[in-house]
Image 1: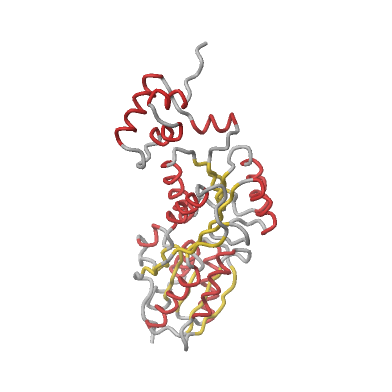
Image 2: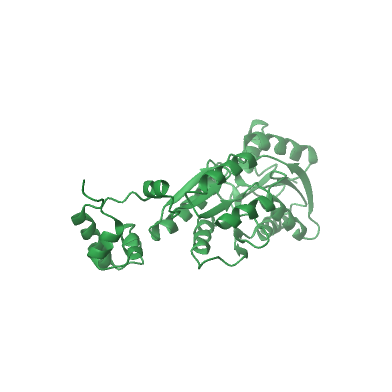
Length: 324
């Protein structure tokens, strides 16, 4: 049996380094077009057929970068994953994804399974406690998204400023009593967003409606409580929760925004397609994913600390002046 052609063989034939050959075969823009073509011709001539994911899983070389996220069905995390994959592909590496169903026990099990495959991990909104995350970071290079742990690198959107922008907008429309429908009680992002409530403009009362699981069920509870509290607007922890609120209001015949305005957070793609379209704080999900990868690739160990990306309120038809 002939020996298998390796990436090193291709690099040698093309007269480039192995890392350049890897990036060229991945289509990375950082490699000159002529070099990419030379590497591809060498690969064809040598019969090299890369299967990076399989090779990494079998050899345990740990060249993959893994993203562990709480809910792949949430379009926000899908955006983070897409941004991460684009950056990983540009480096000629492989991205691996795992969904933990927002369960700390599942998350712990997934991380144990990832250890032989990926020495570099992006943990998006992890549910584990700080000590457990530090244990993972002691075994692998880790960057956090939407979570802050002392001593580790992390990146997030400016949660507090996003809430401030939403409250300023509602106040400018004439609202004086706004309900905040929070996310899960253990959510770091929710705690960060709640800090923005302190920036409410003078004369605007914010009513804490409670903590809710994002989605239809949480939205039913939040909408009913908002109506009972007599608020004229609801600011939801995220768009998924806001969608649930809108659905419940429609079921109860409550017109939006004529009787109740609704604001979401994250600005997932469906937000602009609703009727009425959803006013939402846009968080750059793709940029979060790309930045996390760049931090992982920055030297032996990325610098600890939280990087905060700007967010921007997108005003649409779900907010208007309160009923007189």
